[in-house]
Length: 110
Image 1 (cartoon, helix red, strand yellow):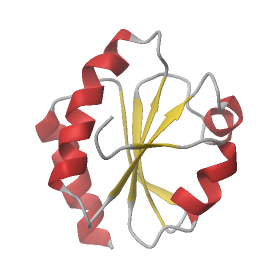
Image 2 (cartoon, helix red, strand yellow; image 1 turned 135 degrees about the horizontal axis):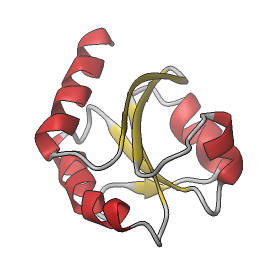
Image 3 (cartoon, helix red, strand yellow; image 1 turned 90 degrees about the vertical axis):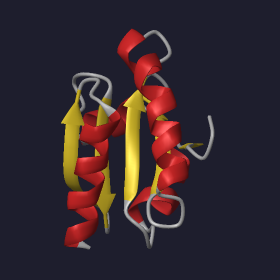
Image 4 (cartoon, rainbow, N blue to C red; image 1 turned 45 degrees about the horizontal axis):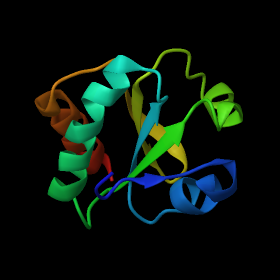
């Protein structure tokens, strides 16, 4: 899983809401084919943005209260949180370039 850190309801507050850096959150599930396709791309991005953005994964089957709280109805959903709020979101698998653009826009707002 590279530099992406699994988080659950217990670690969400510390890892995402209280993070000093923006956080790229991958909402996924093991049974989701597109999620498995996106995972290596997210790991590459975690390496590319090390020290600028934190990367975490939320298994929606194990943390369905988080999925409900943030209205995650389709996976993969990739969201960027800054200071506890969603500042960018992409539903469904996309290219690395697409995610990079999303991250760059979010970083420009920080």
